[in-house]
Image (cartoon, rainbow, N blue to C red; front, side):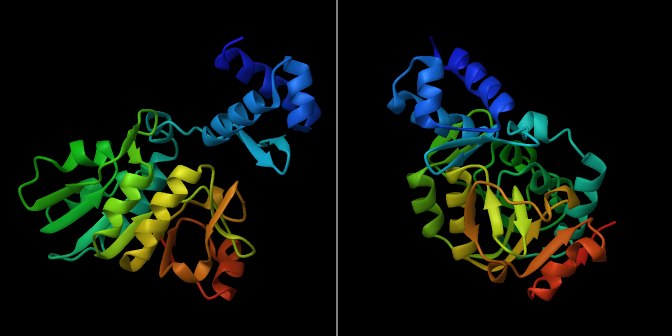
Length: 250
């Protein structure tokens, strides 16, 4: 049985049982626990299940992790958030842009600015490469073809060699209780490096992700200078009480 076949069986089993241990899945699939652990890690990075201690549980709303799929969701809202975010960028700025689909939407609003962009996103590279006023520093490392982005230890080392005035990042989950969370350790490590090496951190996050938690906890609310969102005051009240500055787009 290959990975794709095991993946279908694992997701079907979780859909029925809600949560299962590695050993229960190993028995169902007649595979070794080591194989199941590896499969669960790979499937979790696709955002299709949530890892637990010793196993996995069903995701209530499986995410679309491929860039092409994500970039087509909530486009109007993403454009409003991106336009608001781009208004914070001044000529002469050095900025980090992550590989999120909302951050990508900033490109159209940056093309008249004279800036330097440091990014791990191939779509951002393609969108800005012919803009004379924008210098691009493409982060090196291992390519994730689905996300069209560069990840890995080498990418983090690359980021650590630079400082940006501002970082513009996305997130898979945001809550007052658990801060910023992500579906993937690879993406969270890149985002953490951006946060560590930026003077200001701007989080672009639509209302659907607020109040939800994902697999990997990687930053506290205090790491973010400004949240840019379409969520109303009621939904962001707990975040404001936690000390987060919130700007409403649209």
